[in-house]
Image (tube, helix red, strand yellow):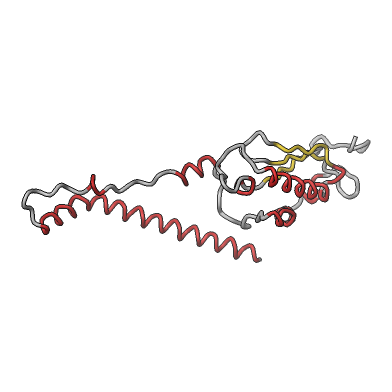
Length: 207
């Protein structure tokens, strides 16, 4: 009905899907790892802002907008018919079918629409890759290796001197110490590399 009587190519895109979402920390700031939970006020405000943005950019071309609450975090699917400003079915000539640059501007536009809610746009050109939230918080909340010196340090021998005990302890702990130092060095390299990539992404965003 929305396409009307115009001729449709065999390979034409007759419907497209827009997915809108936000980080778990927006919907449940005190417990972002708690699957399936959200604060109702946060949900209502975000839904209203997102719906307004869809109306502005897709408007009468919308077939259906659905709020999904059946997964880890609330999100919205919008099914729409890509009819351009001239009334023609042409996904490429809508703002959603443009270049990488124009799509980035759409992301900017949506970020601006929800900025008042405290939601920030991700860094443009970031090298970050998606990680499932359950995996992320499992890693964050996992206990680090505990260095229990009561287990690591040897028992002193009767009448053993402090000098001998010190030498024996260093020899016993050296292997573990070397491993820990290597882990710390690798972690520092990873942190440094991540910061360099972040700075590059921020610099690229300015241009």
